[in-house]
Each structure stands twice: as structure tokens, then as C-alpha cells.
Length: 381
Image (cartoon, rainbow, N blue to C red; front, side, top):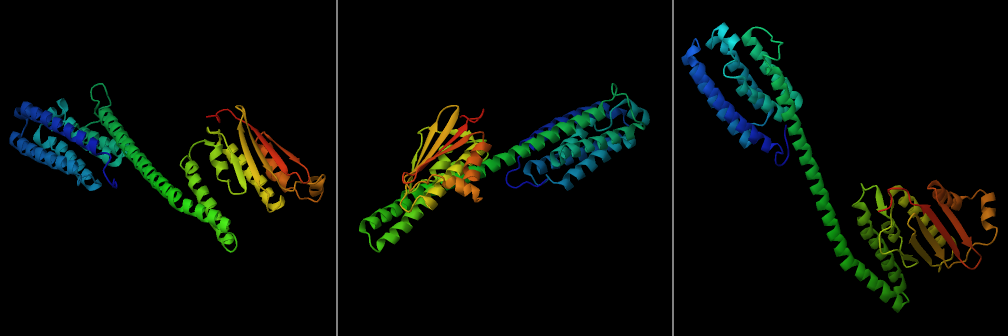
């Protein structure tokens, strides 16, 4: 399996080569012990030299990485099966029945481990079945007595366990890479935010202030600078909520702070007011609707004031303006005419949250919305 960047299974490949070394030592001891009982002892030593040479080649290939590909693993499996089948040539039939296959099933397990690291649990277990089949072919029958021959159980267990370890290593590596990329992106965005705040925003604020002081033709320039300053401040503030996009809760202050401007004054608690993300988003949208009404109907010079109160088991947001207010009966008349924007956008939102929205207004004395929502369990940080 090709992997970009460092191979997360490298430690497992290294451990596998240590097992290979130990299995070669065991195979050497086995060869010395049984060589005199073989029909062709010289051929056995020649094939054992092939075994050692191939084991060394595999160890180098896997440790350096160029052998960690399907073709090499399949070649290893083929060599293992051929050496196991050579038992029929090296020894008598009776010897094959009384002993494990030459050059030991422990050494043959290297093929199962390599396949599991390369192909996963399925590939490892399939290779384990192939190794077991070669063992049974040498003996000439299938031994279903697992108490006397547990080769198939061992091979399947090794293939499954090593394959799962390799998959876990790859997934952990992917998660770590994803987290590193996200962290780098957030750090870069925070750096840009600081630069914007320390440079561009301060310059725009200065241009806006001096432009309003000078007046005349520069007033238009001051208004443009002020509008851009507010837009940049909202963008800078948005980084706080964007970085927590997967969090089920959010600080309502972060959302409301984006709506501050020359015409909107925010009064927010110094500590976070944490709500369930959906509740906070809907409440913020209702505040936005109320501020839209101020801009559209309260008069060109109206100023809005937003007050956020954390009452523990509930949260209240008050949106007040010093505009023209709403004449008595005007809302009822709008409802009769089918214009239900305020009812649907503000009252409807709060009702859906299990809260309430109360409007207090009088002609010439502005309006005030009081938006109240209960804090649901788990939304209080």
C-alpha cells in the first residue's frame, strides 16, 4: 500500500524483521537437529543457504522500504511455499507425517506477517491459509484435530492481529496529519488576523475618525473606511468560532460580537456564555432580524443597543433602539395585511427554541425586544 510521506507502519516492519531473525535462528537449529534424518542432507543445506539469502534480501528490502509493495510480498509468499513443498524431495513420507514441514512453519509465518502489513488483515489471513495449505499438502492429508496441529489457528491469528495493528497505525497517522494541517491553517489565520488588526484595522479606524472630524467631501471617504473596518473586525472575530466548528457548543458572545458597528453597541459579559450551537445560532439570527428592523424602520440616525445576560438556567438578549418606535396598532394592521415578517423571524425562532420574544414599543420612544431562551442540559460550559 503506497503511503505519502513517512510510512506509519515502519515500526511494525522493523519488528517483523526481528521476528524474521529469530525464526531463522530457530530454522538453523532445526536443520542441524534433523539433517541426518533427511534423504538428501546436502540438498537440504543448499536450500537452507537459499533460505538465509532470501531472508536477508527481504529484511533489507522491508527495512529500507523498497520492498513494501505487493509484488515483493507475493514473491516472498511464493518462495516460502516452494521451500515448504521441497520437504517431499528432502525427506521421506513418514518423516513428513511425524514432523513439521521443512524449514519450519515458524519461519514460514514471515510471509503471513509481511502480507498482513502490506494488505491488511484480509491479506494476512489469506496468506496464512496458503501457508497452512502448503503444510497439509506435504503431509498428504488435512488434519482437523486442532489439538495436535494448530497451524491454521496460529496463521489466521497472526494475520488478523498484525493486519489490525497496521490499519490502526495508518489511521492514527492520517488523523495526526489532518490535525497538523488544521493546526497550521489556524495558526496562519491567527497570524493574518493579528496583522490585520494591528495594521489595516487601525489605519481604517484612523481614516474614519479624521474624515468625520474634517467633514465635507472627506465624509464619504470616512464612511467607506468605517464600513471596511467593521467588515474586517467581523472577519477577525469569526476565526474564534470557525476553529471550534466541530464543537457542539459555542460562546454566544462570539456570534453577537460580529454585529457590533458604529450604529450598534454591544454590552456582553466578560465570561463566555456557552449554549448549544443550534440554539446560539438561532438566537443570534433573531438578534440579526431585530437589528435589521432597526436599520429599516427606526430612522437613519437610530442607534441600537444589545445587552446579553447570562441568568444561569436561561439566557436573555435585549435589543433596544432610540428610533421612531412603532405606533399602536401598527403590528396588528401588518398581520391583517399578511406581512408577518417580525412574527415569523423573531417570535417564531424563539418559540421553536422553547423560549419567548417580547416587544415593547411606543411611537417616538424606540423599540425593545427581549429574547429569552432556557439553557438546555449540556449547553452550559
